[in-house]
Structure formats: C-alpha cells, structure tokens
Length: 91
Image (cartoon, rainbow, N blue to C red):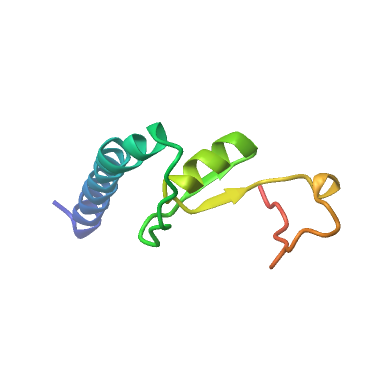
C-alpha cells in the first residue's frame, strides 16, 4: 500500500470519527438543551457552531450554548446593529 493511500485512509477515518462525535454531542448535549428554552447556556467554544438564515433557529441554538453565525442580506440589517466585521460571500 502506498504512503498516499495510507494518508487518505487515515484522513477518511478522522473525518468519520469527528462526524460521529458531533452527532453524539448533538443528541447528548445540544438537543436536550433545546427542549428547555427557559434556560440559556454558556457558549461552548470547542464547537464550530451553526450557520443559519433563520432567526428562530439561531435564537434556539444559541440559547443551547452553540456558537451561531446568522447569515443576513445587507439590506435587512438595521443601521444601529453592532457589526464587528462584514464578510463577503465567496462561492
């Protein structure tokens, strides 16, 4: 087996392991927190977070302690909103 094949196999294993770990975190930690929206949890910096255009989803997931990136069209942003940095979309 070539070195390149070994590297590809290890990378694929790592990707699948991290996917499984993320699903377990979701069902064991995040999903139960989202059932009880009365409590707001501290944001966990080890999670990559959630990208969404839906304000309701952003609110619910953030209250569960997940970092959130709310994607909005520039025309929908109020002039008094505190924006740290504008990022251009690059496909």
